[in-house]
Image (cartoon, rainbow, N blue to C red; front, side, top):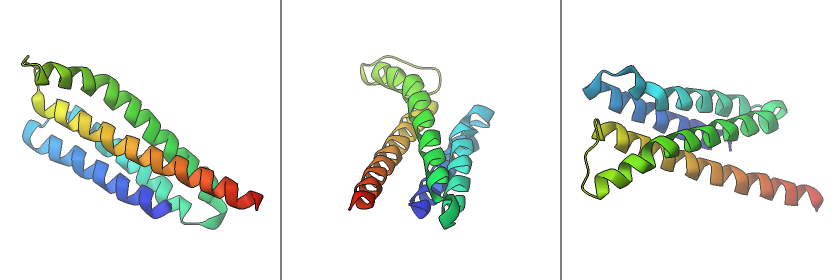
Length: 122
């Protein structure tokens, strides 16, 4: 699961950099910071002794990213889809992409945690 955290971390870093290039707004790098934290947790999870704690930390980073990005992006996306206008549409798309990536990551983490728990009982 550590490699999955690294992959999602790299995807979030790429999303942040891709949003930063056209806008030059520092807030566009928020997904990159979440991705960096997630990737670091993934690297730590490659060590057997740190796996459990590192993956729980990575899941927490993913959950915080999903909540933050969803709270900011989804209402603005609804405005865009209903024909309204927002100040920075690229930021809305970036927030929604971060939301989707983080939700998928958290779901994968929860499935992995449940599977590990069931395997321990056997």
